[in-house]
Image (cartoon, rainbow over all chains, first blue to last red; front, side, top):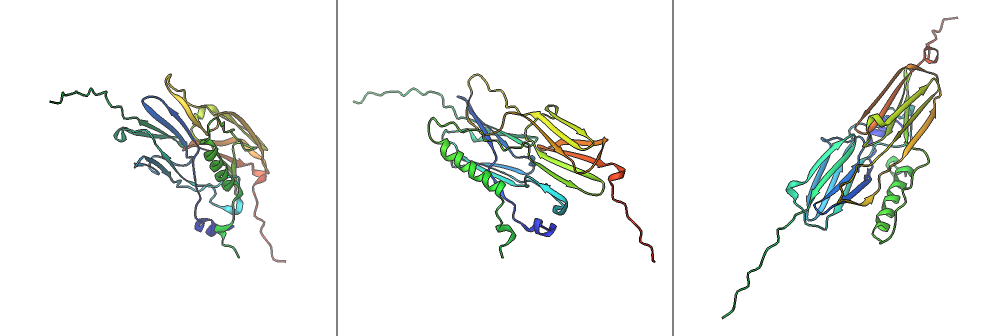
Length: 120
Length: 147
């Protein structure tokens, strides 16, 4: 495989491995995206769907003729359906060493007393 | 003739198939998804040129202090432990796909390297190890004399 062929091959997009934890207040996600950083990751939320995309700038193998590869450089994408109502303005995302950490707070509505009026 | 992008890469597509199976089975109550590990971990990419050998490994989310690299003149050993964050008292795991394990892998090198000239860098979840060839392993250009 020549360098030109490697560069023109469409890069694979894989679903990153994820750990998910939930509490009464929030949902936390940890996604593995080695090679990605804060500039190459995109997190969006629309209609109950949380979508994470990540791209990797550098290829793991620049000279295929002298390279033995057990893994290839890929991009990442994964979508989650969030059944709980969440506070989208307070979603936080941090990435360190290829691990993206998302904190998705749930929307907590204060209990409301309903006033009952007498019908005449 | 098939286009090069139609050639099936067995490693990555099996990973996709495994992820799909995990996702389908994960919706069934009471199903524990086994953490299926590849035989060798971490997977390595090795390249070499006239001066050095470069190894890279994907180890996302690790503390560099938990990664150990040991080099002999003809082998490299990468070891460490992948851990998960501690959860708060009121949190519970609802999905676990990431590995949490000790690992150790030794790779034999095809040439002798200088154990005093090793560089190991961990960044963006990728460990990169650069090993310099000893002088006797560097190719030497032979000049051709006219006969």
